[in-house]
Image 1 (tube, each protein chain N blue to C red):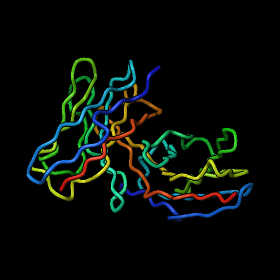
Image 2: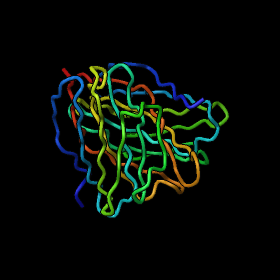
Image 3: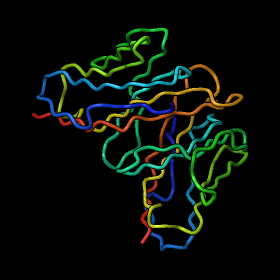
Length: 115
Length: 115
């Protein structure tokens, strides 16, 4: 029940195209959904995040769409650039006990943007 | 503001040895979480420390332990190393981790290779 399922595993997009990565969850206790971007040799970097009371959040070329009833959320990268080539992880956070919280990560999507 | 720092960045150990990794969180952050990242298992939560107390623990054997100091710096220790412990160990810090948004910021990781 703690799983976050992410797809696709890899994605190849032409420069200027739209990259779409999808995630699904089952645990309704999740209440915060961040996306992370990771370049080789680096730690994951927080990209954008959404709360379940919002259906969409946009920051620059990055948009999260959230469907609470379907328990799905997705990351859209508009006008994809070669510099966006990285691994993207969706995650979901829930309160565990007391004030403790835990992030559960999806399996990651390796995005390649062709010049 | 300086980011999360981890030392050492690379480490090679032999089976049966033990290892200690260090993490310095962002100034003012009191919560430190540790993750193991491998190609096969992805990002897996190890444990979280807050105000020198372990607040949350993932499903790892007791060979994996950690602690947090009064300045919020954290260390994790792996005893009796196994080949399967080869991984990127990531540390992430957040302000409190317990309320509302749960923005975690990751360090660059320590690449541990067990031979």
